[in-house]
Image (cartoon, rainbow, N blue to C red; front, side):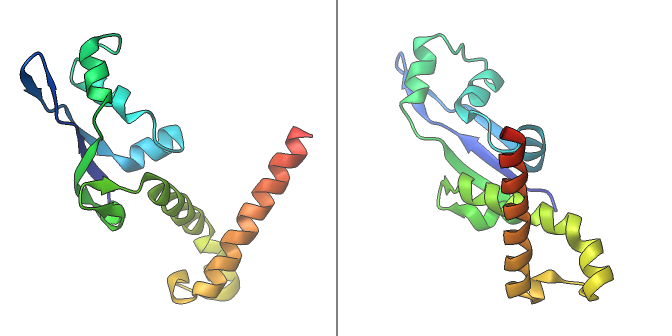
Length: 140
């Protein structure tokens, strides 16, 4: 299931209304950037707005609005606001569990970890703890 959303901004410049729009494939963004890149810059680039212009500054003064969420992204859309941080955490944990699923199946004979919320929490906590410990060891 693809996670997609539409981002747009409505603003006024020199008496004209502008509504730059961008269709975001959230799975591609998460894989490429491991999070969300600067969306204002992406909107400007996609809509031929020079990032060194007053036009761009006027765009920055407005909030990005979101719509047309697909996939799990729809769970993080509230009106026209999108919980990017919540989606990032969910997406990363979802992919961690997808990578662990063959081990979960082999060792515990569990087909759907969602049916075992306590075990799911423990596995994710162990994964994040191990990752944090490894990062600390590499930094030290």
